[in-house]
Image 1 (spheres, chains in turn red, purple):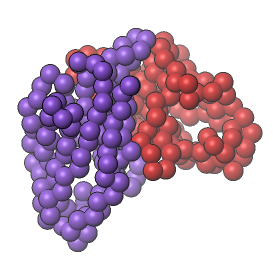
Image 2: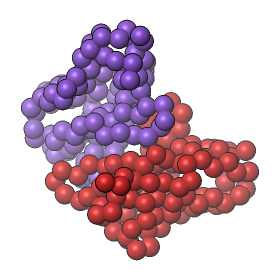
Image 3: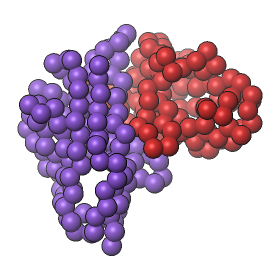
Image 4: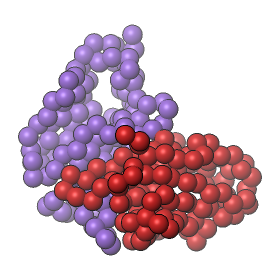
Length: 114
Length: 118
């Protein structure tokens, strides 16, 4: 089985630059989640897709953040005009809608904004 | 509001000791789901167990066991005969069917960092 993959694994950027992260979920999973995790904290929910529809966005997600899942498969998370406070681990998870739904996580993309 | 509390920030044990990680949750829903994940130093969150609110049976998987008690809103995790490879941060999480589209987002505790020393 292929698990959830994320690319890149690490990204260093300068403040003000745009960055884009990609997540490839487990192939039959119709739900996809993005979370953000900072040091010493648990993950925080950012946004959620069911198939290609983005159904919920956290208030944490400012206007500089946008996410897409154009064909209901892979997803991208873009951060425009990055700030130092955006430095974090960005985690993607996928799940299959159903009674025993469980989210499986990718390895994460660690972002450092200088 | 939903909340997960893991009161133990760090635990250090010697190999072969048993260790229990505590998790207390708050929710208004009658149907909810509880999870434990392991996060080793590599950073990837590894799913360990899921428990539904309507199923209070405790579970054992090898050296791992979980004690779910609705009366005290707790879902504790015990590692028996701990090993160095168990060293990681362990997260307890809660999900409900809330929000648009039946969003099952996870609400997380702060995690417990477990160090198992040889």
